[in-house]
Length: 129
Image (tube, rainbow, N blue to C red; front, side, top):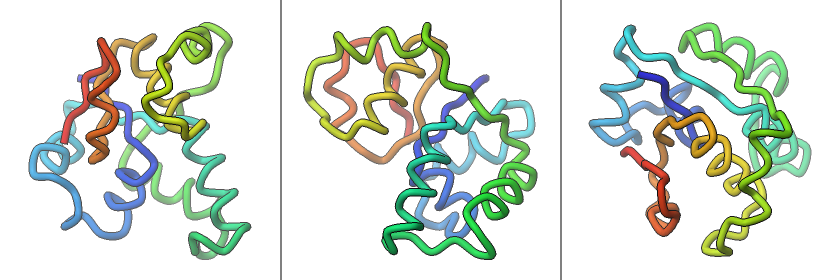
């Protein structure tokens, strides 16, 4: 199964797995599953690091690369076809990074591993926690 990790899911899987939901933790640890991290999440982590809201050592780039390797996760690029739904998504959630993750999950047909229940308002999105 292919799974798109929300930004907080990736961070918790990397540094505090106890914060993950039981189902999310099981899915992430299952070697048969393909774990995806959106470029949008890497971008969000880098911005939050720069503004002091998130500390990533030794640097955002190195932290993300190390954790991608450790979790055996693949980077999901941002392509125009994955952006198309963003313009038509209802405004249940205004965070631009989350809206891009929602669009990517919908286009790819993959569940989004997220603890955010606000995402359940999006028709067709499968949120797993």
